[in-house]
Length: 206
Image (cartoon, rainbow, N blue to C red):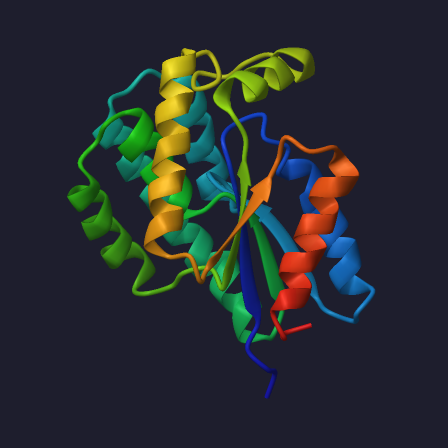
């Protein structure tokens, strides 16, 4: 029987640089003979990717956003994440439920109790084994986004929104510090990678 896999999520406000490090960690793990599945949220399956397009580009309120995100998450868990973990793979996911609490809960000001109910229904206790939080001031992240790409519906929101998102992440971090590794994402890329490697090596899994 395959040993149980590990689930690692990458979190942070848009522009924090998390996505660029997922492939590097995948290479690091594969060099240690691990099967690695790289995925993302919203998205990760055909259905969830279709829902992602709606969430990122169609106007809607915070409850609708949350329902669509959790619907995609349910399909993602059933179709991709849980099967990979069951066969012993390591799953690296660009965002998971912490993002929902940060963006819809913190940024939008949506009811955290409703999010907790949806989380319990959809995830049935599933949480990442390790969450890498790329913490970065909202103003710095905005500068990076402006230089990198055309903005989606969220990325066009003002600085105050992203400060609330960052505060939402901070609350999640404070509530579950054993799961989180907080990274100083304002550092140069090599220095951020050193923090990621240290967080990985701190766990005795690899």
